[in-house]
Image (tube, rainbow, N blue to C red; front, top):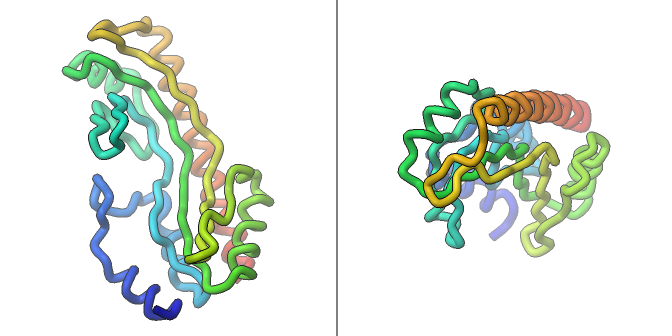
Length: 186
């Protein structure tokens, strides 16, 4: 299948993510990439703050809290206390955008834009489909509940929420800068 047909077919597909829709903070960047003749996006996340019960099988991971924006201490505390999960991790993740590229040169151009913003863990992850992964490095995680027992004080939980919000703001700022640089590239 040629690039144009693949792009048309892929962009008509139903969103298969657990959420079932594109995250609002990344939508304008995806629209920009998808409007370009050399690119189309295949998956993305704008970044998020989570309370999760990890599983060896990704689809079996349980979420007590998911936010694609800032969180407040009271909602984190409530989710932690009300979750029936016996183990929970507090996690903040940066954005990720997978983009198929018409050519290796187009992939290299997109990757250079990402790397110029400090997206140092980004790369070309497939040469068969010429796919670039742009990923932000703002992230951290720590265990907050084990064997049904909450392991952290309210003060520490508040610090976790504040730090996650600071990192999410940096993540969103990086998304906007990426969008601006891509506009200039196009």
